[in-house]
Image (cartoon, rainbow, N blue to C red; front, side, top):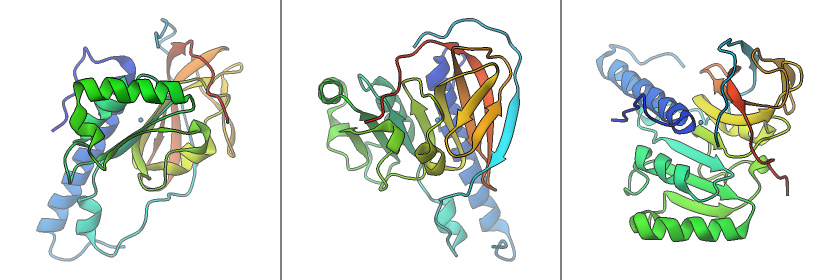
Length: 239
């Protein structure tokens, strides 16, 4: 069982809550399936800012494979990705949350466009959790965060982006699982942020600079965006 504490960092806590909610949702689906008489119908140093919060909603098609079996849906393991994984710290946090070191555990993937940081993160993990590097469910790879995570791990229940994007990347929006959450710093222009391929969305609380936002996708594929706080990150580089 995942436990999120008040002392958890802003970013780690947001991703932890996303995974916790997915886990609770999966358990609830499994319980309903077991008791039903008939089968059911077919995701830095934040600066203080205004406490106002605005949520906007739009719709994007879900890329989660459909299944004729309710048990296969309820038994799906948690999958997460950190785009701009840096030293690998948050990727390891995610891995421990989803049990990526276990044969039948969830998946945790870290992506960075700098090979030097990928090598450093692997070295860090080797010194603290060497078993993760031997797991098929854990990976630290060189790649472009704008292009999303590798297809073998998608869709992702939690996505963390460790650098500021000019817009929420379309690839990550597509890879966000139904019921999942993405935590991402994004450029804000007079209260608006951009979702790549979906246009601008108004998000209260940010007049300019960068905003840390929570992007959530519900079971119907509706995407909502919520402002968290103001931040300062390095840019998310597109390669």
